[in-house]
Length: 197
Image 1 (cartoon, helix red, strand yellow):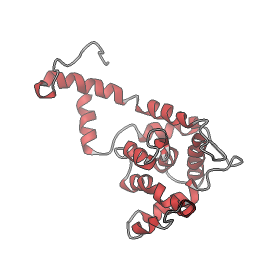
Image 2: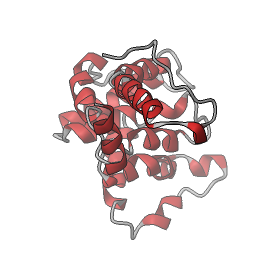
Image 3: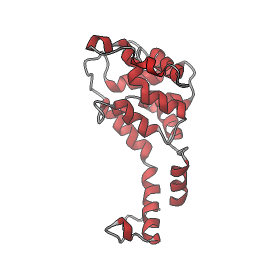
């Protein structure tokens, strides 16, 4: 159990002791368990933000995940679809990067790359209307995850602005999200989690 009364003694990291870092690791372990709840709360910040679209950004995320799920994609992929635009609130100019950083410790390299680059790939449908190069995604055509990202954008992300389309509720995806965020894949994070007990 996390003892919130225990605090490290140092005021500069160079002075930290093993005991200090055991306290911090214990707190880290407890705090990390709440990550799925914080993610869902942050995703809900997109509710009511239409940004000029027919459905709000929260509904768009749910509909993207619904399309991927109904098409038989695995839970990790569906969670990536659910969270692909979670960065809209804080990463106004780089939302895909924000989502990718959040997902990186927990998902495959292919899924991470897909989320990180989805905005460039989606630009094919509208960049030319804004005086930009719609074919920017072609710079990545030789990348091993190009086809997966192209599929994600064309089949799930881009058509997910339909007020008449199916939109499963967040509660439906919650078990998948909790499973994906239950244990990081990257060794550095795994070691930190193991140390924190």
